Length: 318
Length: 253
Image 1 (cartoon, rainbow over the protein chains, first blue to last red):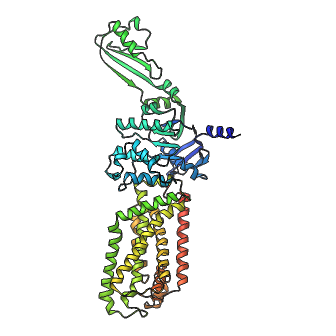
Image 2 (image 1 turned 90 degrees about the vertical axis):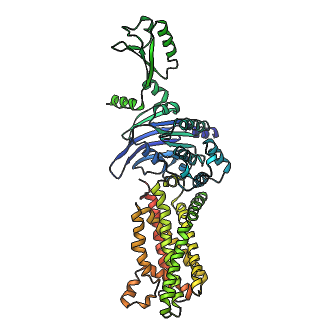
């Protein structure tokens, strides 16, 4: 019996959204009948263009936006009637950099912990600050920090109450490469400790790097919901373009096994491959090119961007 | 009850008070001292006693109320308006706190500051005029009740206001006139009969009158009516805040 209850708790989704709609006072319909389940312990990436409804969806779950219709359960707790239980499980890092100005890093993170009903725990707060490389800045006023540091402070605030579910709304927008990598590491560490993570992003590589599952939202509708690996296999094509040293009239038979295309002027060779296919065979291709005596001056690779994937997805639906 | 949340908000707001000590405490004290110099020392010496109380001492309760009301409203309204303005309110809205906990935190801190300010002004006034407090317990109770009530009113105002102009509008256009016409500087018995009756529609008259009673034992209107009026206003503000948090008015979209 006890086992059964435990099992049910394990299999209960972290977040369950059903029939969720939102129409703003302006008449804008931001969400249309969204149904979505976020699994416990997964990293879920919500993709979509600006104004698609990502932030509205997060806002409703976190209590910043009133839903017009529909229901949201956080770990089985209704976000309206059981808001206390639901919200104490959730941490939110909003898109905008909205921080206090005059407070110190230490004070603001402890404030967040208290606000979410947790007793003071300097040891835990220290751990969070250290993990986010904020420990040296703990006594500084937030306004003295750089944009990237402020972003970290917002993450630290969201983690201050040991949430089980974390929302990251565009966490790496306007963040430099180093910090982006660091955030990915932090997110992975959190997932390892059992935290469910929902992130919104514009960057395909971010979703590719991080997510277990991907949902694409457009004009308030969930147009796609898939395991990342599956989605990447379908859509994540990469292109290798080789600028040849000498004009080539046709593709030699020795290279027939590759998916190659020769440009009309014979100066470019284009190789299309799938990033998730494991062995993509670039090294082998280059070796075979060499063996066939084809020399090249330069090469570049291109990957489908989210925008392209998105456009093709929406086109495909029509 | 999420006591940690109340404490966090209260501490945060008190820290803000201490950061702005100069503007929030020193400036009201200076302006009150100016009133004493002008009305108490310069003009007051030419005015006869009011109800057996020297004019300089007579205006003390009114002056304390004047500062208490304006500071309570401006401090509490700013305390909630500013997070709304900068966007940091998102955290309070997403936290597992009830409307009452939010109110206790914000209004409690604002009221603490107001009561402290009232006591500082009283102490300042005792340097200028001989003070007599007949009912110290009631004096403190009125101070507290008024501070809480008007901080709550300020809190509602701060949520209602969408911009700085609206934030200033109500204190300047409604509250300041009501306080000045509420008998801060005179007993309403000094007015012609028509204005005496008109004054009874000014809620501030009841506050100042009851507060003055706690000092000198005499009042324009019945003390129990004053207390009842204040409590009704307090209850109305509480209901307004409850409604605001239930519906998300000007807080959630």
